[in-house]
Length: 381
Image (tube, rainbow, N blue to C red; front, side):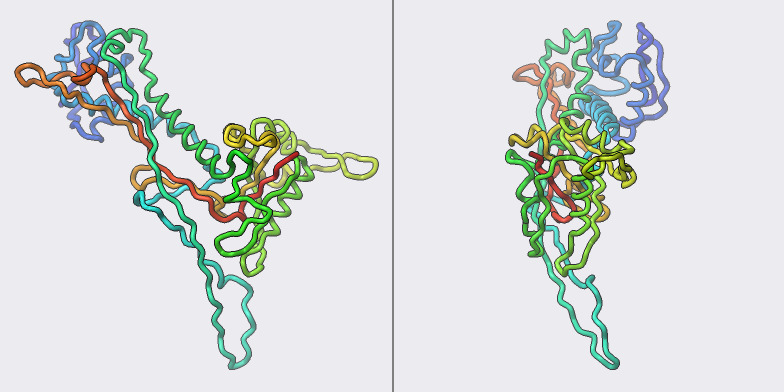
């Protein structure tokens, strides 16, 4: 395929040189750039809607059997661009990784050997200290949706009502992931009992208290950060957890912003006087999660807030993707029609039974609740 019709030429006599573009993933990405330079979408050319240019004008460059591949890759690239532009807020406090398949997987936790070393006497023997192991279990799941357009709707779509399919699919994936991350930390009764408790027992057997009932204030935020910093490992060694990500529902956004930006606070003396607010110096990052009040339906859902450590220090939650398929995928169903005489049909004429054109979006991910020491929940009154 050495050249492509120029959409600015109503006669179809002009050509847009694009070099030798193979019908491959790399070639179609290059072809997508040609479409972006042209003011009219290539998809309209494939539909044969503009300036009387028929699909047949492409026959020397691309056969109709390539149309699903061409259009599908263009929509896929457009969706990935929109998906990539939106940097998910939860990725700052939720670790991410990959898994090779859909089998129930086990993440192993090995602990021990990092506590204080005992003294070894002269000519004394170095003693063995046993390691412990714990196991977290999780599994990837598949999520998706089919979207179909009638042949009549394509013909009548002079206003480009379906040009935002990629954006809709991208938004669907972004919302699905965000909600599933929220469901890792909360449920209909408040902070999720699989991660938070008074106390909760970790897989290493240690009881960990990481939940309280304090409202969000400067003093209570300082108290909660101190409680996180006091967490210990199974050997009783302090691990100095630093809570640096404050996650709140939309109802607490302004309270949280006031706390993180105020230079002064009132002291707790009998006659309160202004004092320096040191919280802004601690490097806390604010995250407003709109799904907290959707997933959590308890009466305290508007006053519950969370602290998370940096995932590089320790993982409280993790979202994993299928290895090699971390990005969402779109595919288009090829037409199962065959013209009289055996010739291929334009895929945009739809399928044999209904004349509908079908698209499908798919994403694969799975969530994990891991070490409770690296998070803290406060259920405000």
